[in-house]
Length: 268
Ligand code: FE2
Image 1 (cartoon, protein in one colour):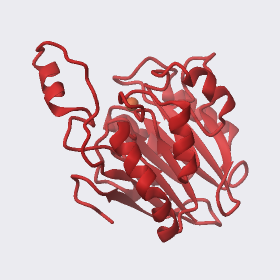
Image 2: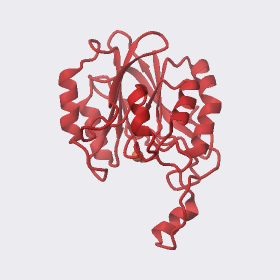
Image 3: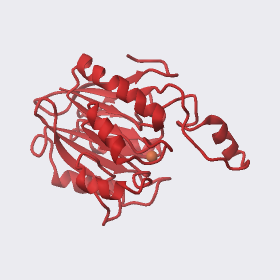
Image 4: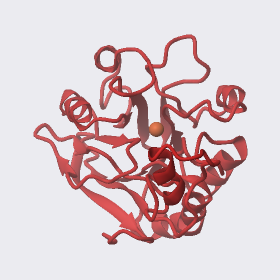
């Protein structure tokens, strides 16, 4: 059983690379389940639309997760109520539209729980993520409620992500970070069997500043006249992790980071 998680898809560049390469990848690597963080997938680099979700599902994505930009395209507030495969962070203040957790069927028929969480440090205000995680673990159990559990932790700082990884160790198949758009080089299986990587990185053009046009980004930091910001348009690198899961325990046998195409050194 193999699960592929791809980090934040940024703009047209990220989307087109996924649409072109995901199905062949799923077939070649015998991937059973695919989760993609899509919160930057819109043309503007913020939010996502119903049409973008449809394209992602049509090319083999099983679940789309999000984060702080989830509501940046207003249609998502209504779309998420009817599209159960689209998640928003579970610890948003209630009431919020949509759900932050779901149980889905993989291509091989196994049940995969997907939990979307958002960090508290340097992020939009939301409920305490550690309290939300503990509450979740009291309610749901690996191998009882689902065969595998993937946690997308959308957060800014590495310490918070590391702590969430250890908190879920032995209780999730994979804890992977998103949001910083830079892949970390720490993919490993933790002591009790949970696969972990602090950040998956983005699926976007790395000749940029976290996926956005580099000149505009520099000018914004230099506080020069503000120009309309937009995503970089070069070839994207697809970044994520592939976990090989143990069917008996629901935990990870091994995990490797996945980098394909674009500016970054490819790991596949
Ligand atoms: Fe984000």
